[in-house]
Length: 267
Image (cartoon, rainbow, N blue to C red; front, side, top):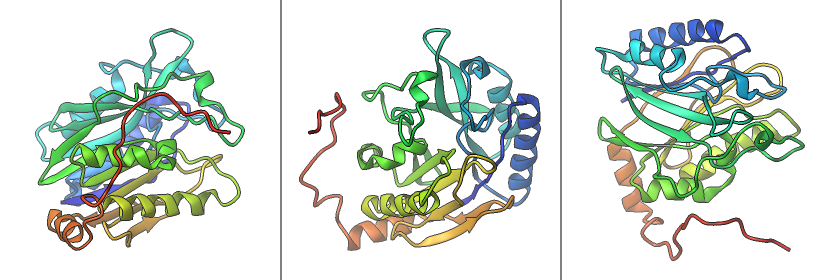
C-alpha cells in the first residue's frame, strides 16, 4: 500500500485550506497513493490557538470535500478538523477518515495540549478516554489513529495496538520550541519500536509549529521524511509487521494492560 504523508500549512481561511487540500490529495492520487494523511487542524489553523467558531459539523464543507475527492476511487484520506462541541464555548479537535466517498470513522483527541505554556482545553473539550479506538482495515493493514499530544502517552498507542492496529497515524500541529522537533521524531520512532507497527507522522508547517512529516517502519527505521512541501511517501507491507512481531514478540510478552480511567495523582 502506497502512503503519502503530507506536510501542510493551514491558515484561518477555510476555503483556501480546502483548495490546498484538494490539490494535495489529487496529486497524491495521481501518484498512486492508497492512503493520504494530512495534519491536525488541516481544515483551519491558527498558531495562536484555533477558536471554537472555526468548528463545522461532519456534514459541513470540509468533510464533504474529502468525500468528493475519494468518491469512486480506491483512496482513503485522514485529516484533522474541528467539530462543534457539546457547548458553544468549546469545540472538538478531531481526525476524520474518509474512504471511497464515505466516512470510515472519527477520532476525537483525548489528550488536549495543556503543556509548555499552552491550554488547548480552554477552547476544546476532550474525547472520551473510554471511546472505542478508531482502527480501520485498509488493504491488509489496520490503521489506528491518534493526534499530536497523544503521542507523548504510550498507552494511547498500546490501546490502538490492542484493538488490532498495525499502522499508527498521527496528524499533528507540533508546537515549536527548544528540542521539540527532535522530540517529535524520537517519540514517533519509539511508538513504532514498542508497538512493532508502522507510524505515520503528518505535521503542520509554518509559524508556531515544527517537525518533519515522516514514515517509520515497525523496527523504528525512518523510511521517508520531508521538511518542505513535498510529501513523505513509502510502501507499507503487512508482511513486515508480521515478521517483526514474530522476531520480537514484545506485545505478547507484556505483563500490563491499558485500562481507560481517571488521571493519577502524582506526588
